[in-house]
Amino acid sequence: MNNLITPIFPCKSLDELMEFYQSLGFTVTYHQKSPNPFAILERDWIRLDFYGIKHHDPAKCYHTCYILTDEVDELYEAFTNALRKKSGKLPTRGLPRISEIRDKSYGVREFMFSDIAGTCIRIGKKINMPQESPASKRLSLALDFAYKSEEEPLVVIPVLDKALEKEKDSDCLNLYKVMTMRADLAIEQGDYLLAKQLLEKAKAGLGAEHKAERQRVNDLEQKIVKP
Image (cartoon, rainbow, N blue to C red; front, side):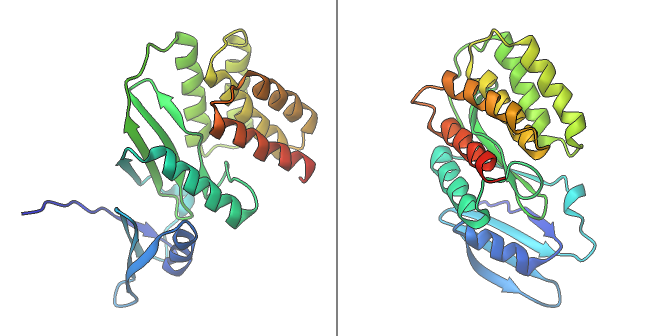
């Protein structure tokens, strides 16, 4: 006997949601229009089920799904490439949006992805996490706040600025990720000089092995050239 649990997530427009996930490489394997709108979307072994409900508000959606897989890096690359192709840029604010991929202190390498319906899909794999410095942990918390928060940038920015000031002498990967996140918000506010300074510092600190992080810096530099 096979055991299976399948959560079903809400969305306002099932047609728009299906189109969105198809752009990420998913296939609609079942679609019911009435009496209750419902669809199944699959990509290889991943299955996501959705139902349509007119009064759904994506901005107030708190539904979350966690996917544990050894393919976390491959999925991150596939999703970021698809989002760049669809939007012309990598969406890091609003809906949809995607976080950086990070090694977390609780022993997983993961990223967070929020779709157009507001559902947050967390994708990770278990890793043997080396001892993380206190500074790196604090910076990690700032990154999590910036991604999860639905607050205006004026609420998020002071948190990132405080983290950068406190940990400015810490030579760790999360410091450069916070710089990148802060640069993203600076671009959003039209402060291209600050964004350029932060991205230059981040790029100088990132090694060649940090492929995903360097790509994100490149994405933001393109926003400065073509705001």
